Image 1: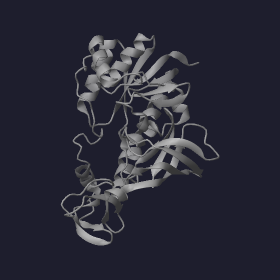
Image 2 (image 1 turned 60 degrees about the vertical axis):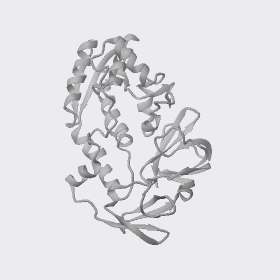
Image 3 (image 1 turned 30 degrees about the horizontal axis):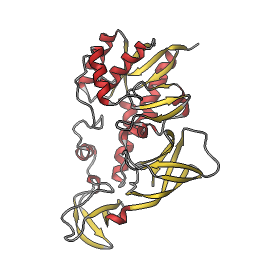
Image 4 (image 1 turned 45 degrees about the vertical axis):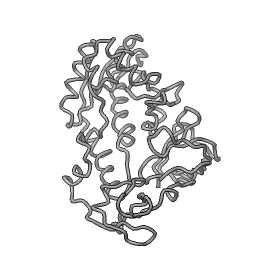
Length: 335
């Protein structure tokens, strides 16, 4: 029988998960921290151990390097080489991080898992956190059974409030800088990371309306929506499409970047899959300002999203995430 007061927390060694541990213990939960070793962050395990010791929580360590390579690193690299813009956290959360947390919880007969994401769970629904820090977009591919057992203690807080809580709890990582980079590429230079794994595609052409207007230094260094200065004198131009098959990058003017129809493949529904069109709002990137209303047409394992207002430069490989108010309905990969 599962223990409804026991929770397995993803304890990363950062301030967010540390405050989660303190809040959960304050609420009467028996907290077991699980540190996921990726072989890249030497300070993480040490800081997680310091937090666990300070709070009197058990800490377990699991090596996830093989799973991370198979489920995240290799697909991330393949997508970039195909001219897409993948989000590694969205790949990792359901297939590595939350899978490991749930497996650990099952071994310990714990009912709940928890992380330091800025989002909320309510009665089996996944919802947005406070607007300044909302990370619900990153959780769009969680499985319903993962959401059902998930606690997100930081959903009602903003980052400054969490820092203040860390001070109050006497947490040793209270002033540790936020980690914004890809966890397996800590220097943020993903092109160099890819080059160490295999040779990168070489230079090719920038094309505007069928005319070659310059040369790029490899498609893996660009993403849809980026501005490319210095190519056209009289107007700003932006990347609108990356064609890996021809090693060309197509450019467009600002007003040409906007689309009213977005297709998303391999769509993951957190709610029961609707059989008929539904109304929702959509995000096509992890930003706070773009969330237009739309009509969603389920089409097999993909959806067609007709936006009431155009969205800027939906990038293949990024995720289109649907919402009903604050509730996350699901997400799929833009094509």
